[in-house]
Image 1 (cartoon, rainbow, N blue to C red):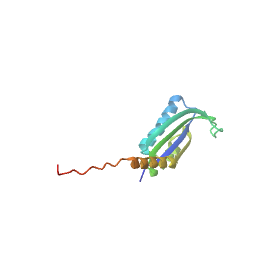
Image 2: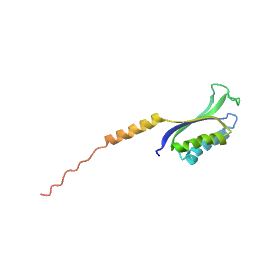
Image 3: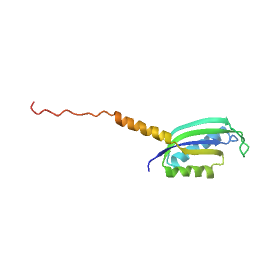
Image 4: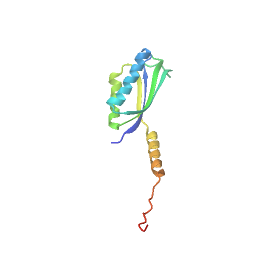
Length: 128
């Protein structure tokens, strides 16, 4: 099966120290690369941001991280399970497929193939 492009965003608890939040982000990155077998294409820490509303845990802000990665579809569900079971410090997450990026990548590949020059060699004249 072909790899797909996915986007992940998660919010780490503001109650943790900066070092602990960094460790949590690296842990999630490791899950994607090692457990899911994903290839991270883009990874961005947005840092502490105010939430739109207070969570049931009482948080009004959180440490945001956003990324784009490629992985096999059957492995991506494992990432959601890892968030549910192993991450007491990440209180919100979302993983979804980015079909728009897949289409853009496919169009780029098709244009590259169309733009390849075809080299036609002239036949060698044996009368010389």
